[in-house]
Length: 161
Image 1 (cartoon, rainbow, N blue to C red):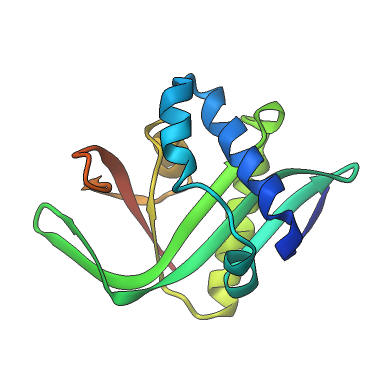
Image 2 (cartoon, one colour):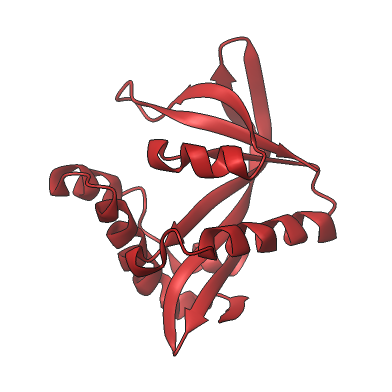
């Protein structure tokens, strides 16, 4: 398997992979399409952020990305408040590679990036179906964080290096 930086013209491929990954977990098509507006990868995003893809036989089978949020990005979870910092923004695996170790390999690449850039905290909003994975990878569960204006929450984690 080849791991490499994504290129801007792969944005549509990454968007489709993201949606296929969400469908794997049994979400309704209506729910997936509602998420699509938030999960739509853009060429500009790839140009300005760390985005690494896993490729096998010329096909992209997963990717990971890290972004830096400004101090104005505030997350409040109970008594915890986080202002800005680095976030594991995406970690998506094609359904045929889920539960085969690819997520762990991509997350390890993200950790290596953090070490190289001297990033000591990496936050993430997790899909509820991935909560166990992040716990196994030794992320600290902070609590449930509100997402958008729908009142929906997602597990929120932090990795400390």
